[in-house]
Length: 121
Length: 402
Image 1 (tube, helix red, strand yellow):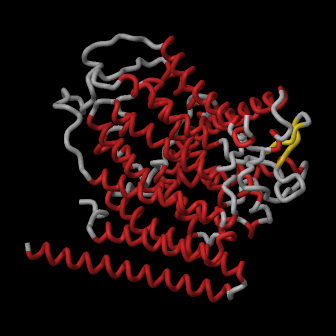
Image 2 (image 1 turned 60 degrees about the vertical axis):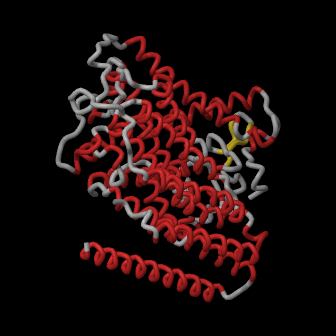
Image 3 (image 1 turned 180 degrees about the horizontal axis):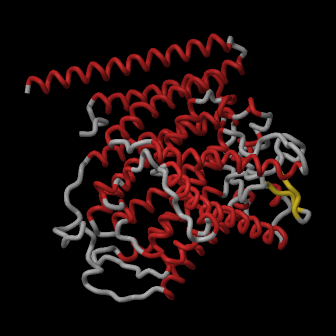
């Protein structure tokens, strides 16, 4: 096992413990709980009345736009974290570059703002 | 501080033998117990405290002061019938609780819960002849691990709502994911400030860089702003009040887990409180020096853990306090706060801290640099406020014309 991966050994063991907790408690539930299915119980919940139509109706497109914006900022993090780690290494050059990068990014956000994308109607 | 890519729990230095594996399992058991006991306590604490604040009695039947209430609830849930809607996607419906609980647990692994920092021991203790950190794991990319796990948590919420095949859960989960990803951007950007100061992503290094006493804590060294942004973003990330639009009962019934029942619902409930504890622990680690604090009396080794628990408790209390005090945000206000306030603020603050560090390094006049960068921040903020006010006035004029 490589040096780098060793640190994750504990994480993997912990993940197994977490999975076991869910598995065991759900398994215990399966053994202990009653099971009397009926058509009514299997119906989806809609405030007590019979459900109408399919669930995949039309939804607001805004959620999707926010997801797109998020991708922009998440990709940006990929560039910012290495700079933050090597701040002294890149020095003034890095700072100027990063300022330009962040300003461009902020312009993107400003554009979205100006376009009214961030306004929730 | 060592090589940032090395990670470096000293337990693995001598290779992996039987003792190391046993110790790893022991650490996992201790961490696991800590989280589980914490969750059981937290659920009781939240209910009791909120009852006190609302002039009620709260749980008082199961055990002394109702302390065993959580266990009683758990046992009740196990005996309940488990329903799955006929329109549900059966595989994903079963998978979602795992996806929600796993990240809640895993984030806790990177939190140092004790150990003396700032001394020769550097946060290690000796157990059975092995030196080890008092944290479950120390991956070299600790902070990124935190961000990754909070991203995975979105999957659990999203898939739970989607696979239910029901309208309210779908709406709740779409809302929740939009909220969580929005605030994740602010969360990530405010952590960068800490990384800038420490030069390492490992939580152990971040804590040991803060071990010089009260004034060395990152909350002061980063200038409080990233701390505030992180706390707000963390509250939104946890879907806790005042950002609990996910389960706005009046609009969405129970939110994304409406269709879940029995122990499967219990898992979501558990994960929610587990996330609260973990996030508080992360705030303490990143900004408040983790287990840092003076040893008062008795053996030195117990004090870091006591300090850690104390700081953790303050945040747990605050989360409950917020819930008892503040009304829920409206969705547009929530998005505005995230995108128009927190993200620009943390971006600007990031550059300010970077400039100060570089100025310090290059021997420029630090006070001048701070002045100039803060001034440009203020100018930028004023320009933004002006622009958005102009936009609002124009919009109003257009609406009046219509």
